[in-house]
Image 1 (cartoon, rainbow, N blue to C red):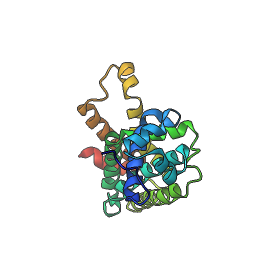
Image 2: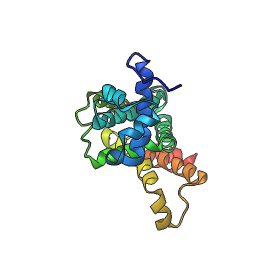
Image 3: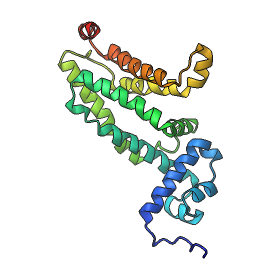
Image 4: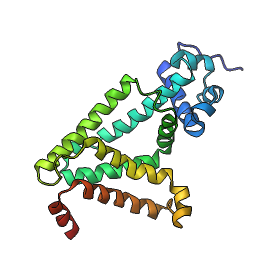
Amino acid sequence: MARPPETLSRDPDATRKRILAAAKHEFSRYGLGGARVDRIAARAKSNKRMLYHYFGNKECLFQRTLEDAYGRFRAAETALNIEHDDPITAIRRLCAFTWDYYVANPEFITLVNSENLHKAKHIKDSATMDVLNRPFVARMDELLRRGAEAGRFRSGLDTVQVLITVAGLGYHYLNNRHTGAVVYGRDLSSEAAYKARSAFNSDALLRIVCTPQTLAELDKH
């Protein structure tokens, strides 16, 4: 028996989730320009009519896919509850989490790369992005304040610069690990290499934010 056409009365939340999952796969593999709505609909076990009904058009779907990807990242980060950690532990856990998330979710990096090619056109005016990122910046601001008050971190650190560094330490490595393996003559994609890089990232950030006295203490252990 032929499958009946999908109708709007069927579980709309489930349909939207399937479409977003399929869109994430398609956009992360082909970018916005190379992505095809037909493939997204087929992978979502839906049809183009449903896709257009829920998301408008391909560019709107791309924006929503980016918002969803950032939302999942921020939700996982929030679940760390670094507010309850001492400042040194919080930095170590945040660096390790960021690295592990990038490794486990490579499509996040490729989606961000794709949006950068478009100069953030699709998320620039997104109210969702603002809601997602304000608490993210505020958490780091509070962590740096706590660390400085405890005499563990240097005072006057630029929160945004620190956050860019947390992301960049892993983002650049993973984006360039294949060419880097050729340039440096070293396997940068092995489990051992990933473990070493994760440790390096945490150590590097602590050396940026910590006071000399704190670093001296850490070096003893």
